[in-house]
Amino acid sequence: MSDTRPDRQARPGEPDGRCRPGGRHRPTVWPDELRLGWLTAPAPVMLAPMAGVTNLPFRLLCRSFGRGLFVGEMVTCRALLEGGQRTWRMMRQDAQEQPRSVQLYGVDPATVGASVRLVARHDLADHIDLNFGCPAPKVTRQGGGAALPWKLGLFRRIVAVAVEAAAGRPVTVKLRAGIDDHHLTFIEAGLAAQEEGAAGLTLHARTAAQHYSGRADWSLIRQLKQAVSGIPVLGNGDVFEAADAVQLLQRTGCDGVVVGRGALGRPWLFADLAASQAGSDQLVQPDLGFVLQTIRTHARLLCEYEAGEEPAMRQLRGHLHWYFKGYRVGSELRAEAQRIASLDQLEALLSRLDPALPYPGPAAEGPRGRAGGTKLPRLPAGWLDSREVSPGQAEALAKAEVAVAGG
Image 1: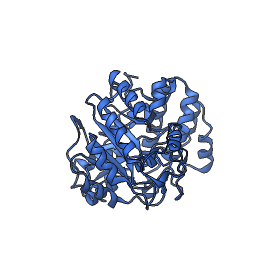
Image 2 (image 1 turned 60 degrees about the vertical axis):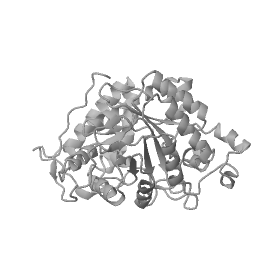
Image 3 (image 1 turned 180 degrees about the horizontal axis):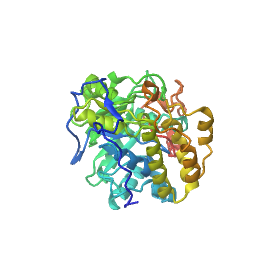
């Protein structure tokens, strides 16, 4: 896909009737850049890895609107070493992707080290992020994801071996606040990661028990920023619009923002963030025609990536309800959208909509994606009894590298 370039979209301030003064914030706190070791990101903004979402087409689409680090779907270290076709497809980058960012997930220092060395040897990325933030029960019940930093010694070894194996590439660490409110790990894990050579930290300000429910506790990001003074700290959680990003920076003093669910069906959020950093209060507030054109671009990119319309449309179906959020397109059309299997069917569907339908206001904004409720984390037997890994827990960790959604 090296010749593929997403259709250019409107930027804030362009006279196309789709960008209007937002009047919701006066940006004053944006850092000029984000430095991770030797790497300087073009903006202190990161697209969070999301399984089934942040593949190459979606990353290119987001990049067409703004700047920053756009991290691919999380790849398990074991799968990368086994060399499966699906895993290598997930690792694909495009010539437009500079800098290139990947996220790896592993629970065994030897496996993590070998996979990072593979990335370095084949020059697959400029920046490597390690996932210790996944709250999925199928991962935490085996000691992986957000449960792993509780075993601080193991956490240290994984970060240290990754930094050594990266051959100078910056290694960052994604954390959750902890397992639950009684077992917080983010401060000690952040300090340990800094001591072992990590170039930066991201904190999703929820515990594993919260999953994606409730509100992220941004005060935890401020605590981590105050505790870790030598490397950048990025804040993650509940950044759904540019005003949220500004408030996060103001309240925490963190060095950048990480956007996950806020970009679902709204890749132009990165245009709003770029405008905010530049000192503009204008926001992309698209009419339906703008949204439809974005959907068409996304569909085309997916078809090229998937080398076939049916699998591409299967992926696109998962995005359409996010794109249509707030717009009056009708329940019948929404249901039909979940059955499209070709570009012709997609175009027939979209042609029934009025492109002049105006931006619907707050109905199109706010939270999107999964939320759910608080759940007791599933952990290996006796996991919280000690900070060391027991023989039985080591066996559970060996099974923890499975495909998950990130954190």
